[in-house]
Amino acid sequence: MPVTIEHIGSTSVPDLKSKPILDIGIGVDNKGNIAIITDILSKNNYNNLGFRSEQMGVILERLRDGKRTHCIHILELTSRHWTDYLNLRNLLRANEHIRKDYELLKENLAALHYNNRKAYTAGKADFIQAHLKTMRNIP
Image (tube, rainbow, N blue to C red):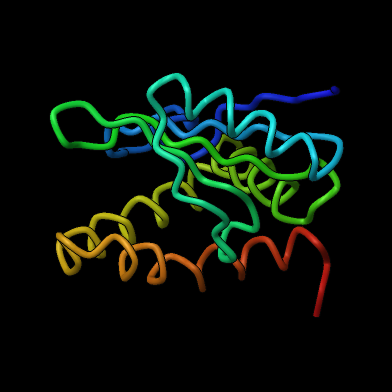
């Protein structure tokens, strides 16, 4: 079962302010392996949040004292979303200007949507998609 594990999300980008949540991407060679990995993690203190269409994969989380500390994203290696996770991370690592703009956006959204993770995440979508679209060279 070929599996690729990558540190993704804001904590994977040096010099980017982030919440203390470790995001890990697990890429698998086929959908059947998603269930196997999900089962293993569920037996090891990860809560299965199920398939999330906005991430196109299964999401699991680990909590400590009621707060999320780890978020695991499991999806197929051939999916555009897998590539997008890595491209965004690499872009933010490589481009200080974009990284600072993203950081400011995140700070503003965090203040505006303090207790609403869904709204916070949705608020980042246009910024992220615009940069990913440019990387894909799509008009």
